[in-house]
Image 1 (cartoon, rainbow, N blue to C red):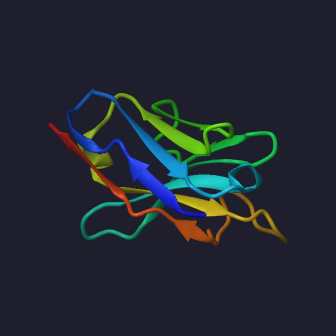
Image 2 (image 1 turned 180 degrees about the vertical axis):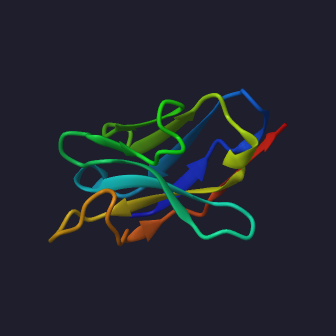
Length: 124
């Protein structure tokens, strides 16, 4: 699994961005996929996840109703559509892949593979 995130940038409050994360491997469809973010001076936090089988989605309370995660297994890509962005959404966003083994779940770590991060800056 090799993850490459893209789509970050500078946007005004209320605007939208779509992040993409492409996996160059051949087992993408069998992984739970997640997005996390880390703001300056803060710990990394969970944003959203989509399961490997039924593509069930999960969101942090702070982004519910504004962000949408989706996956395209044919393209080995997971997306994060971010609408109505707020300055507090400013962070480096990371995609991650998780093997669904044992008691792990999309909202329960650990995640096994991480992308390099893409910076999202929301101006007020």
